[in-house]
Length: 218
Image (cartoon, rainbow, N blue to C red; front, side):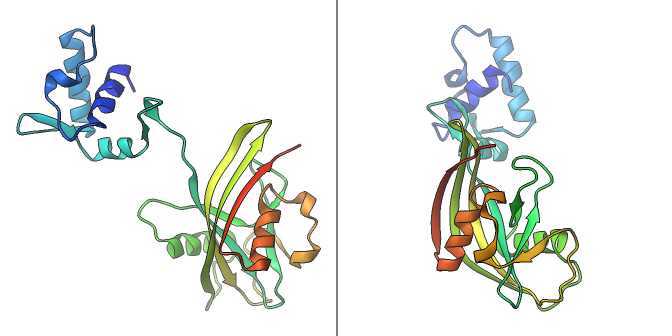
């Protein structure tokens, strides 16, 4: 986005309404400023109401992610559903990751929540997409929340708010993709993705909230 448009959005992020002249950056020609203001109006970031300007829907969404200190959208934790798929023997499903980050390492069933999606709708979508699409009478139980931050050499690789869902399945479930059930206390923790070890411990302790900060080493 052009710096003039960012300037306008920054100004409107700090006020309910503004006049045209209140949003114009210093030393910017009027024609150039008006062009970028019209672009924001056209694309639904800004609206004009009774002679004043205010943030429209897209502008409000921008403001929700905007940092007044950084003067730009800021990185925020992503919201994920984490599925502890547990069979009747109390074993947990571990799948191998086939993409970065942490490719080749074991992990739980994980998926990003979509907009306008409930927690259980997201969990069920991920289950039927990644685990089994023909299972019936499957129970989904929300049991906790985790905040997981993974760093490598001080750089944040991933930052997730994770909603922890227990999914009870029969022993004879037909898995849609590769994966295997393991006793929680017998898993080779060294081969798990960062943070999964701590999540399994939290599940075993029935912890309802866990804060995890871990370092990823290759």
